[in-house]
Length: 297
Image 1 (spheres, rainbow, N blue to C red):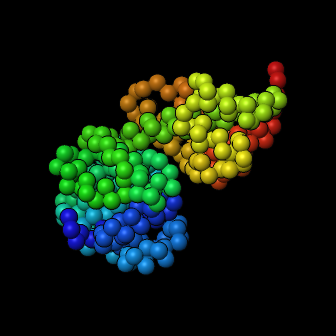
Image 2: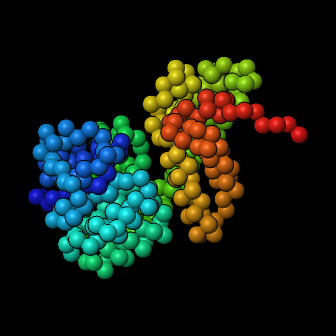
């Protein structure tokens, strides 16, 4: 894979780390200029080049997508200037976004019709690990494509899980995020209740940490409860609500139970519609506490 030109669409909070690690490790990199990108001076200093239009990525042998969700992925690939109309046969599309698996399967089929490879390589962990090149990747692809692309993926990932054929990476990502977001939402609601009940945040955190509430979600919420630091989970309420809606779509598509997911979705929607869509999920204890009390029967 030496010398392969890599294109990127989406150099935001997560994509910037991917791009920086690729450029720093010698991969020729082109990225799409977009208002949602993080500052890119460091990428340019590493030799990456900026392009203005999607068709300008047509000569890349690999194109990585790291955008907000399914509508954005579909627009990048199928829009009037979409990549599938311009990229060359043999190009591999690597979708690191969070997306609805049924859409992923449709796009993968269209990519194959164009003579291109397609893999979903959904990410877990945070922007901090992205900058460190330590993401977890959940990869849906056939064995041959997975083996060919692994050296590229290893440039920005610490743990790479081959989940099965195309679509399974996005499926496992939605399962993962449902558990992660669900636990964080549950802990946040409990923390808000604890505050209103007169229990100190430090006592609440300590009791959960030494009991059944211990886990990654608590570790990410605790810094906000203990010191007001929201950096443990730089993931917006709007994105959390979007991911829960994708999980609900998945569960309905496969006919799986989603009773608890409906409750998490309602809690997140209450925050999003209450004016907190752009706040971090780690701030949810204070956001729930700020909501008006529900009327009693």
